[in-house]
Length: 378
Ligand SMILES: Cc1cc2nc3c(=O)[nH]c(=O)nc-3n(C[C@H](O)[C@H](O)[C@H](O)COP(=O)(O)O)c2cc1C
Image: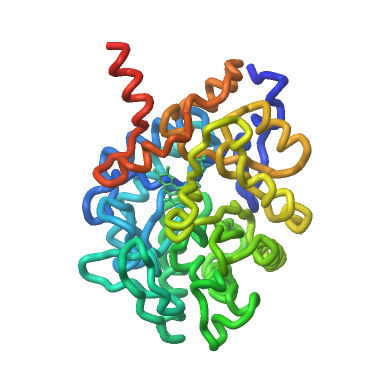
């Protein structure tokens, strides 16, 4: 039985024409659990099935590379050619076996933050990246158009696999966010120079996908709305971007921010902020509040430090956002939605320590706090 206190959280809502059974989204999370070259294997199946069983309405996959040079890491799922389709198709089918659970592919390219033995990173402009010590090579206009096509092709493959929708990863310092940030985009062609041109790559990909797949396959974006660094993207411009994407027809936006530079400078580790008190939770709420008035039909997903179901319910009730998303809480408790639905309204057990982040180096990703507690009990 649904708790009356969480009536909105467990009510259905649409993204485009796709019905999501509740308002709980698993925010994209790279679990380092594909096989080395990006094909899905048993570990990914187990993780996604556990999430589906646990009651999440929409699972957004982890970073899925559109190009071999755009992989953030080995053991990361890919959709850069057709050989990935059969495995990904089986994964989607496995998720769809769970009643009404939907799944989105997050398609992405590392851009300036790339660190690959074979491929030198590429970006709109050659701005050095401290974390890798590399300066990316500036893309030519023709190469940008080739990358646009690679995003479109990966989106079409996601559609062929049966994914319910796609999310373009346009945040966290990866390629698409390199274009929209004035700090990393110093171009003087049609892909830089002002707010409109910096957004062009996201518009070109959207138009290409609509031409190929029509209106029935929702196209969404995890959108950088603030860089949290000096001379970086400021929220005012981020709001302009969200407004423009809503106007052209994007079906949903999940505002986010930060990335490698912010982690280096602020020590706050955006986007996955270490949270030490309840006051520090829900750290993208101010961003979402500024964006919501411009959303019209485009759905808004609130992400970042959400742990309290009563807060989530309030956000939906007050129409501040249409969905809430979580990443780290679902690493600790993949069955968190069901726990809440059954009436245990205590907040997520995740303490937002970012221990899981550290496990990305070796994988598969796990919650270190949970493991420590389990060990102590034995
Ligand atoms: C282990 C780990 C992997 C992540 N991988 C991705 C990813 O592949 N794509 C993405 O957009 N965000 C990724 N994120 C960021 C999360 O989606 C989310 O934006 C962030 O953790 C804040 O949400 P939370 O407080 O609910 O964890 C990752 C976060 C963690 C902890």
